[in-house]
Length: 257
Length: 257
DNA sequence: TAACATTGTGTCGCATCGACGCATTAGATA
DNA sequence: TATCTAATGCGTCGATGCGACACAATGTTA
Image (cartoon, rainbow over all chains, first blue to last red; front, side):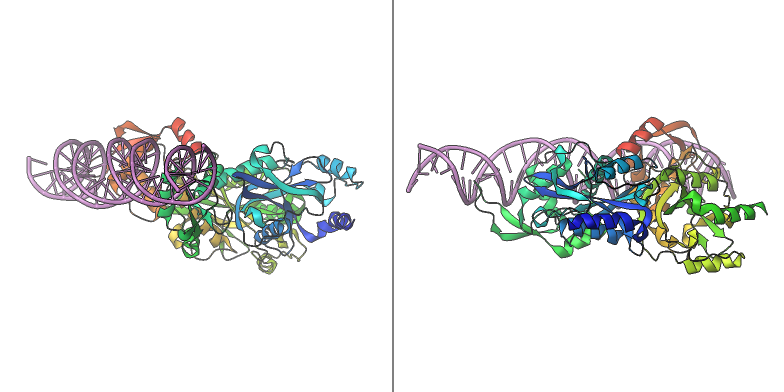
């Protein structure tokens, strides 16, 4: 199994390739079936699922490292990526856990091994279009798939805390940044956009006020087409006005729910 | 000179004491003479001023490390401290710069020395009461003093960028967090609080609307005393209602300027 | 004691937001 | 094919918040 061989290389040579002490973890959000999804990995060495993460090459910008991890796991380039918090507790990882995990794989890791050392991790969250993602496990993982946010219970190490903080940040940023472009298809209806907001905020919003507010931001273009096929009246299709969207990304919106 | 001796110890043994690759820098804001001040250090080894920073001990939480640095430079314990961004460009520091700097001090540092390595730095900003601070240089610095924000031009490495990002974050947080408790004396007048806001935001605000808004937050207690001595009508003194202040710290305020 | 600058308090108009009404329309139903 | 149904498009009303402004109150100075 070649991925297993890559894994051994990673274990053996990682220490000299990567910047020590620093790691990053990505909370990758997607939207599907009116539910907020998170992309998780299951390592062969452990029973728990974990956030896709990685390390920073010696001469690599940490932001580029996050983009690289995202590209590797999702296959996507055009990404909404936000650094949101650094997790720097000295006991957030435990080398005993790692040791046991790798022992399962028949790999012995001592306390001096680079993976046994303490890591300070930088949290990034990303918004991606669900349909465009091809989940692919890394060399140390046996599975990689979307999870419904509500079904996630325990995660590896402190990854649940990281996920919670990411969600908290996303909810805050929803008030200042135009969010939706990376989570929805290019053409979408107002009810679909509303569902997205309701799912993220975990509360219901008034249909008519939502429409007024959203159109008020001026970042949407209403198309002449409608989405037919669903029962009842066909809603208009919208797309983002990229000029104004990018402007809003820089300048921010206003107000709040 | 004992501080010089400590400095040599720091240079020689730091590599084994600290977590590699990771540093932190603090943007310490104070308010005095209606101007926003920042505490800066001047190292003996370099002509440029820099932000107070530090490294993380092997078994130390990174947040605790920031608190430690602040305590060392200011003597203050009760601190408003916010992690705001990670700066992770691979070329943000340049070991040549360090090498030249230390050569001045008669200390030779090779490219393999721990201080010559690449560091990813975590930015913290702090709000402190100007009058309570006793600026004290660290072992590598010859001076430590307050600078008016407007007088700061070039700083060491990328510290000016870090300062700018801190200021940007502070201005944003002004809309969500109750700010003032750590920057003002315990008792203060409404005009004084307004001056603080105006200085941070770099714009003038309407006196009457400011008062309405501030009292509306419900985190202020108006005392029965007034501040006499200044010419003209004596303004009331206020203090923060700590119960409601702390609640607002957690829950956030609302709106925005 | 009068002049003056600053502070305390209130008002007016406008924009925004939450709550809600009503007409329109595509598909389902019979 | 006519009718029903439920979701959507569009509008209204009242409360609230905010910017701009007026005026009275007050402590110091001359």
